Length: 216
Ligand code: FES
Ligand code: FES
Image 1 (cartoon, rainbow, N blue to C red):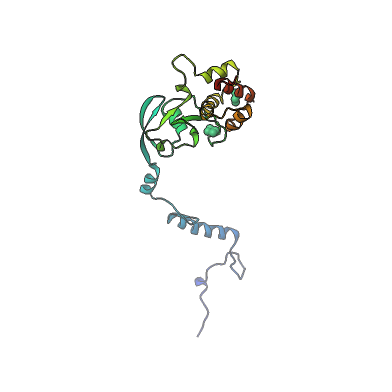
Image 2: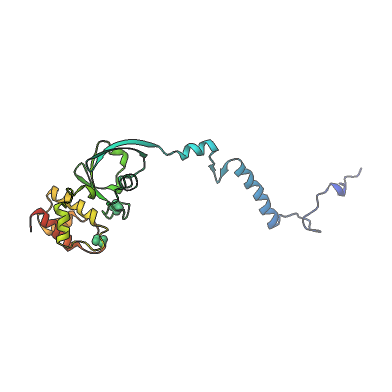
C-alpha cells in the first residue's frame, strides 16, 4: 500500500525548490498585520480598550458646576467646567482681562488677585471652590476716576516698563501692605518675591510699595 501523498495535496512552498517553507519578511509582516487588525477590531490597542460611541460621548461631557461669587462688588452666578481656574473665569467668562496669564503655573504672580482680602495666584485657584467669595481684581481697585494709592504710586515712581506684570504687582502690593510686611525694603522684596518683573523694575516697585505704606 502506497503512503505517498498526492502532489496536489501538498501546499506549494514559498520558494521553488526550497525544502523548508521559512516565513519571508513579507509573509511575516502580512501575518502580524492580520493579527493586529483583529485586535483593533476587538477594541484593544496595546492592551488599552477603545471606548464605544456612547462611552466616548459620556467621556466628552466635562462635569460642570454652578458658582456664585462677588467680583469687584458685583454678584455673579455662572456655570463652569469644574477645571476652570479663577484666572480663566475672570478673563474668558467675565472679560476682566486686567489679570494677566504669564506662566499659568503659579510661578510669576502676573495673575494675582485678592480673594476675601488675601492675595492668591488666580491661575492656581479653582473657580468652583469660590462659592460666596469676594474677589477683587485690578479693575476693582480704583474708586471711579481716582486711582488706588498704590496705582498712583506706581505712576509716581515710574515702576513699570512693559506693564505686563503690573496688575499682579499692584494686587500683590496691596496684599503686602495689608499684611504689614513693609518694615524695610528687604522685607518688601521678600514678601513680593512671588511677583516676577521681566523688565527688572524691582527697585521702583519697592519704592511704590514704600510710598503707599507711608514709609516714604
Ligand atoms: S500666571 Fe499665575 S502665577 Fe504665573
Ligand atoms: S514691567 Fe515689564 S514685566 Fe514688569
